[in-house]
View 1 (cartoon, rainbow, N blue to C red):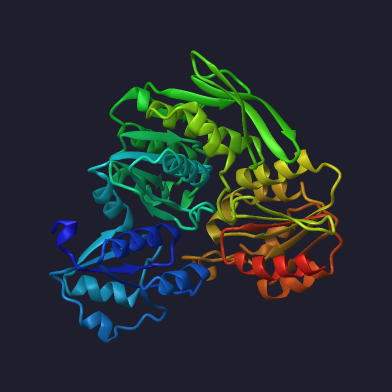
View 2 (cartoon, helix red, strand yellow):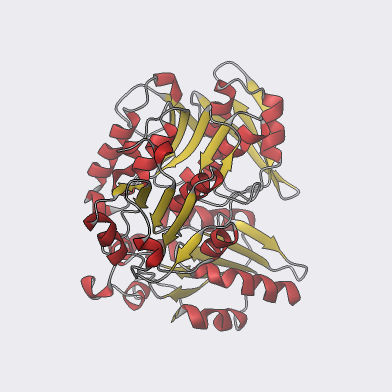
Length: 452
């Protein structure tokens, strides 16, 4: 393979993915010609096109593709795409074709790479680490799995000494990285279509942990067995780094942070949830180890605005609250609903949930039902198939899942009908949750509630 610098054209197969789009933005910012394909036109692809990146949405070998020369073109693809004529064309014509994770590994191998892994929490934690790096003005770049509300992107370039990356366990992608620093937030079962069982995914995380050269630069949530020496972090229990004394005052969360030798009182921010304080704890620990003082870190934590679709909250004049979240696993839904019930115990909660993938719905059906039972009323949308086909998962439908939910107030809806159903409901808090295209409800809901 040529050095990345020798390529002038970069073609992305699946450019609308959150990880792919960060790479596309990186090469575009580097002055390269970037183009690509995605099957769905979304807000993100529209933004990329406004930034000057050419995207097509039909699997057609057009003149733009046939004019590309294999000598100066690198094709980057996501393993979520299994079959595509465009990808076949590049392979048949002997273009250099690499997985996203391989390219990310090549970009970051000459930096001090901070890689954040985990089946839950990695997007918030990596975005928070990036925000703290920016506020401390460290020379870094970041490649994130979510859109930072602070810098309105999933990519930022502020130098090349450090890189912050979200280390994706899907398809064992994170094993392509060369992390100098790493975080492991959780190792719960997920992506069983790849790993098969919980033991195998845990082994994948142990292999990732083994890539970190120094024990003191591997941070693992306390309670996770990772097979080597490391630093631990936690909330409300002692660890190498931990936070406690959590309280809510005037809709802000306060907490105290502890190292093995000192206590720093009264960190404050707007992001609710014990799990998010946990994410903040390890981010603070890493940045302090990089030499950033606690005064700077306190200011940076205080002005962190969060990530789009990670507990994005709006409070309206009529008293109603709208929360939008990306959660697509029972553990994540429990965290979001648990936070809502903790801070708003007497308010009626309407949940609109879109399951993501037939395989995940099948593998965690009982867990999803248990999580959704914590709402007061449920609108369950059709399963978002992403890379999967219904014909390969006979009987795995939203109707099948709804039968497992024991709520009295529950119903099925298509995405197209969901907004009208929401407008007919009585609720204090509305939660839209899922990783598919449920985000298309966000603007209409905000406009409706803001005008009531």
